Picture 1 (spheres, rainbow, N blue to C red):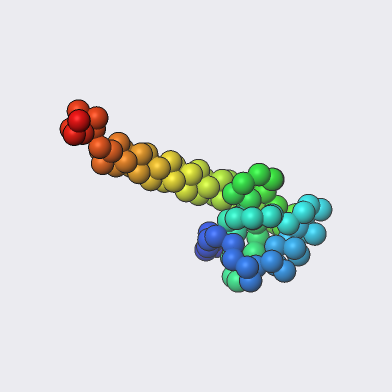
Picture 2: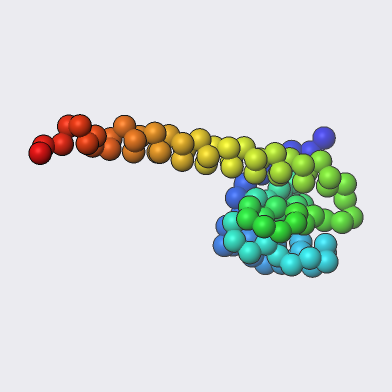
Length: 102
């Protein structure tokens, strides 16, 4: 069993993402992405917008990609929940016409 770290990609990951994409015969993710690392090696990446996951083709990474997809779903659900709270707050704070002065 190996320890996997899942995190958001940062600007300093560009060269490693390019290397990973080249190994997988793909293009590197453009924009936000999640990456999975083990022993300081990037094993897989998942674009958070559009595009397919990329992974080291010489190692069993299907479960790692599934982990990235699960985390992306969790992040998406959290974002939807935050937007929902913001919408409800705006509704509660919106002045009501019945209280407006004539």
